[in-house]
Image (cartoon, rainbow, N blue to C red; front, side, top):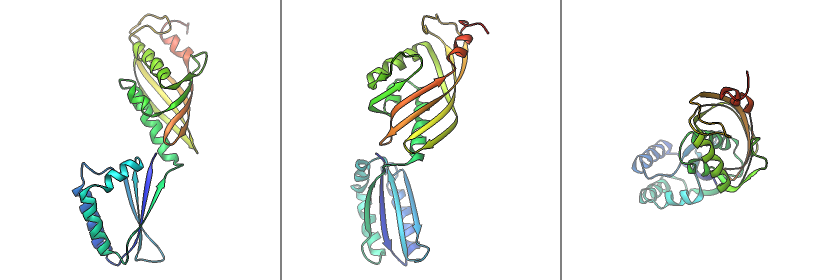
Amino acid sequence: MTFLQLIDCRTDRFDEMNRLMDRWVEQTRGKRTATHDVIARDRSDASHFVEIVEFPSYDEAMRNSHLPETGRIYEEMVALCDGPPVFTDLDVVRDEQVNVLTARAFFTALGRRPPEHIIEHLTDDYVDHDPSSPRPVQGLDGMRAVLEGWYGAFDFTFRIDDQVAEGERVCSRWTLTGHHKGEFLGIPPTGQDVRMQGMTWQRFRDGRIREGHWIYDRAGLMEQLGVLGA
């Protein structure tokens, strides 16, 4: 789960504080687990600052806090502030942009091997709804089997053409391009290059995909493989 730490402080020595933050970034390069950092100034009080630091998880934030470089920088930060900084720890319970980025990473991973690159984006109780399957696919082992079937039949990549997010849901419109190299639904390998468009609706929980619904041009794919007439 994405984790945010808010650092609230007051100082009239912001330029020194800014240089201190730059030094922290440099000293922790390759060790720091923070993914994003924003410093904001109160419009009604020029000495009031709030820093918002984003981490992939609470555990990653704690690893960051335990770095010796972080401890030294914190002591210098306290010396620059008018009183001790106030820390607030926040678990992110809704972030549409994070979900959009995760959905995009999921489709990028679909073009890679092995399936574990995709599985890491899914919850343990993931449910997949695909028109080619008579019933929903339940769980990660089920998805591994589905993915192995596609990987055995095609080399492929996805391009995201459009995305819409609302709350815990993301809908992605995509284009698949691939090469038919192995048996697919009883069709022997044709060596044919294929292109298919579709949309996937995904529901998220705690930053991972809990459920997926797929809609795609299966008839068009079969036509390219020579099974259906134009």
